[in-house]
Length: 465
Image (cartoon, rainbow, N blue to C red):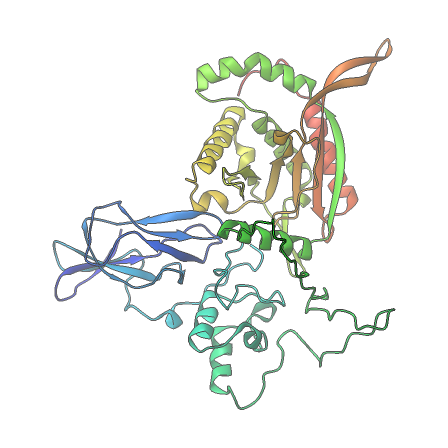
């Protein structure tokens, strides 16, 4: 329930940016849908907001008038920050969706620390902003620090040089305020360096090699590309830019290894063909292959929990919940990854309903931020497009992802009590990409083999459930 604080004059409500998932600390104001002075009704959309996960709308909490917009289009706003004042009829009060306190400027909002490598788990600052959430060194900057830097005219290169005393060298509010008090008196020491930078040695051709960044990777700039007279130039949309940044970051952070295995899924194909019509009549849902595969994957994760993890610096976080993300292609051609929370706790009916609901919401652009947050392992079905296998990129901060290839009929050798025979079987390839920092070939390969074993051992006489 909102908290109330008496004021003199018209009753007012402070509209706060709502919480949008555990890892989401901020959002970008895309567009106001209502002008100041305009009447609104409860649950009417007031403003469009966006994170790197999903676009959504903030509705009016009750009937009234939009008195004042506290933020503008393009602003980055922290969760819990006041974004508008709404006037309402009734007893004079200021209502807030958080514990009441005097409205404070952005620089006084409590600093929010979020994981630096959180996707389509990280919330990036808008791409047209000077200060990014993660600097070229990979260091994370909180919404509060970036806000102060913007107000004080501190650019990204200057911010990278501010010494940080927070976790993993992060710049805290205290650090940036201390820097501002001494700004101009002395040049700050680089936060990520323990000694003066050393010039890179010359390469074999006599030219200087690319200087390494703070994590030892070379700072390589993309080559300039010119367009021809018959070419068309189309700027990436916001989601495509975020996907591009996330994919590059993932390949930069995680040494990828991919293992492959072929599985005989004839029993699964025959069982689904036998029960799918009855399933749809009884449950009102289509039975696709996806929930069957997810069931096998969750079983294998319980056998090999090391693939259900994240890396935080030099620590490994083994996730106890099994939250399976399922990559979904949008009509725009972009990609989004809704998450089935606690996927191991659903039976086949529950998994089918979860898969269908999230897929339908993704196609209709109706996913909430919380439905895309918290994934611990991701599955992508490249077989949807007729591909037999793929080498997917890990969805950070996870350490593994599995690609499901197309199911195809082909001759295969079967071992029988009467000797080997050749038969027509339904076969598919599974591809498992994993982070070699913490998942070695034995773990990554054993997990993949276990998934295939569960698929091949599927009971063709199984009851639905």
